[in-house]
Length: 480
Image 1 (cartoon, helix red, strand yellow):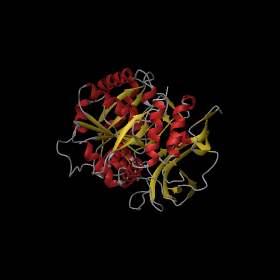
Image 2 (cartoon, helix red, strand yellow):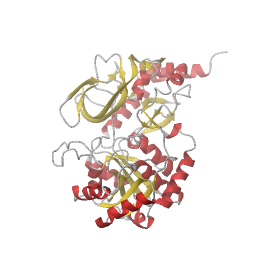
Image 3 (tube, helix red, strand yellow):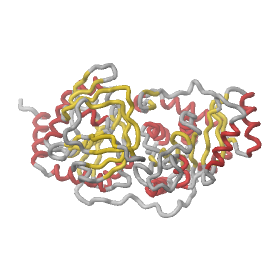
Image 4 (tube, helix red, strand yellow):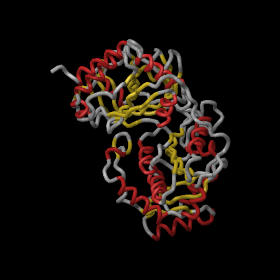
């Protein structure tokens, strides 16, 4: 068993509650696996920080319903407790591609709860209601009888009198109250234009989680919660390990991971390792060279606009990256990674900073948010895709490019309706570069990382790779 922490709407407080539960369990010495519904990167960072285990995204749009089940079953046998944090309101999703589910319900928290047959704990923001809480809870309990509401957590309760009114209203329903949280103005996680500020940028996180654990200890009914959170000793069905994709010689892929680049799905990294890659983390902010033996580059998303000045100041590294990509080193760049490969990045203050310069365009920050699931057809072959292939992706950014590619990677449209959204994405002349705003989850598409590793292995055997190694050696050991 495990439990889904859902909200009756966005902003109800499910992230704070999920983190409080995780912090308490971790402080008690239990092993905990967490999951996050949807494509989010930042909430899982907080989960991982407190549990010490990568948080896994459960997203049937980016993967499949079958993969959601397999991912869940794969990661719970090693732990004592498990928790799934939902997304938006309980029933908020998108239109199902096969039309066999209620409109707007696909990929919602309720959909995931049904797929995994898990009970739901409903978080209710009580800041501006009292007796009406009963109508809200009654509606959520009966809207879809396939979703099992195990109880409610009342959040932002103002006073003892307010609490009494809420409890009296809910009593006739017979619905367990699993927790009561008072207004916690002192416990707040800062946010900015794309959500919460990532963990790497926040000091005193241990103190924050100590406060959350203390909050959980005194606010939740643990006699009722422990059985819901505890993992069954025997998982449902088979829990197949990730398939071994390649037995070839390992290649080294340098993964940009620092405060500027931190958006990675753990399953993508797992799939690269399964395909034969050795992943080495490095920092475009702090390092002056690529890791030894690098034959492929992976730039995830993140916040390069926040650290543009520091990225620009590391000109030696920018020159090295540009030379490597120009020589044909296979490179995969998503969103923030795409921005870093442009000639310039214009930040929110309108200041322009030089970037790598391999893409003849500028990334400019703006107020318009590009957000949503996408279907995209590959128009060109890249290190990860063959021409004509279709992928499901997620787009989430406030920048735009001042010049669009003449030969784009993708023709994209909305996921849930045939509404064209134009072309986008850059590839290199040697078809060894893939740079796009679209975020991809490779969990259910092992052929994607396998292709990338194959390109990296081919490059590692090339004269261009040997020439880069000789150049690097001469720079490190100049003739006196």
